[in-house]
Image (cartoon, rainbow, N blue to C red; front, top):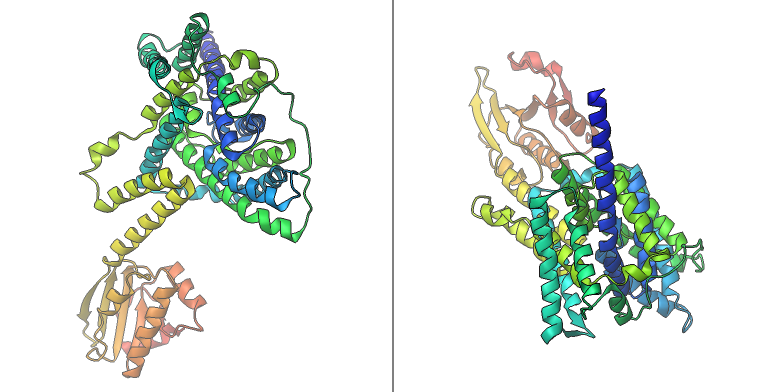
Length: 529
């Protein structure tokens, strides 16, 4: 009875943490969704709808409880060009770009769903740790620089009392978030900081930028709106339309999945649990399809809000559901109160996210890790800041793969000996693939070798077509000199690889692993390939 009571208390406590954390995230989502909508050149309501639908669907069906999805800047910068070109394709004043955006989101969602069905989410495991470090560092810098715009008004930096007020409120918010966890962890520090700073600004009648003034300055009227409604994108279904939106859909789908899977991997490390990348792909895709039909901006996982959620105690699906529903409630019922929140409080929260996101250990290990890994970390960080996450991660993986291939190409070795029957053996160590072919070929002395030569692959593997072609050319060199080449101790998968290439490969595979007899006895046991 006593243990059951403890379990119930613990369960209720987790529910409370999820709800409070979800409310904190919802407050942080408002300016982010509005800002990214402005970046894309669309109404703030579309950004808020997008954040709500992305957050709700992925919270319920996604592969990572506690991870928050919404409208993101990485996708917004792509949408700018899509909307601009879409407007140019339609009649003057028709603003067809928005309709093209919704159609593109539907197609991007379909791509993402298929990626999940095809289980492509597992490829996130191929991302090296150096790329992950560069990713979080670059993203921390991007989050930081995105908040600097909040210190401007009308494109000009705040000055005098306005700047000091903004800085003071930001510092107060960060101070509360730093000190409160040392006193108690029962209240999410971010939520407490936002509430305290908001009350100080409202009752102290402090003149500073609020969510309302931020939206008005961007050309909006507020966040008050009704429920999103179902609409089919009003575009013609033609090859021209498909050829226009398909490239954008692929880019949006790729960026969304990469950012989401990278965030999932990071949250896995923070929580010491394991999410399901394939489920996340399907949930992300379904949410984007829903956005296309219900007039939302679409999006993907948000690392900043996800970390806020995790740090505030939100670990279950309820935290994401609460955040999404609270965001919708703000739009429907509480817009007046949400618009009173000072931007400085939200900026302070995001600055603390930056501090928590950046991998400060980078500076400690910079002299302790291989030079290529240092280069990859710096490269991915820089590309994330300059371009976008997809380019940064893909570039980092490619560089890491090339470094790996180069290092492995130097590992191949050959130990040589001639047995009592006059047969020369080459015992190969290390993988045989496109990068190690040149070094592999240099090991053989075709002109001076005896009539029968055996290459022993007990400690090696034939990896790719380049390796097969190399063996074929080596066999031809021996044949031109009246000699025969045999392969020994190939693993079963290597044998299958060579036999599949039998029309382009002419070498002998010795399938008997116990080769200790004279050449006349074992010639019958070899197969001509």
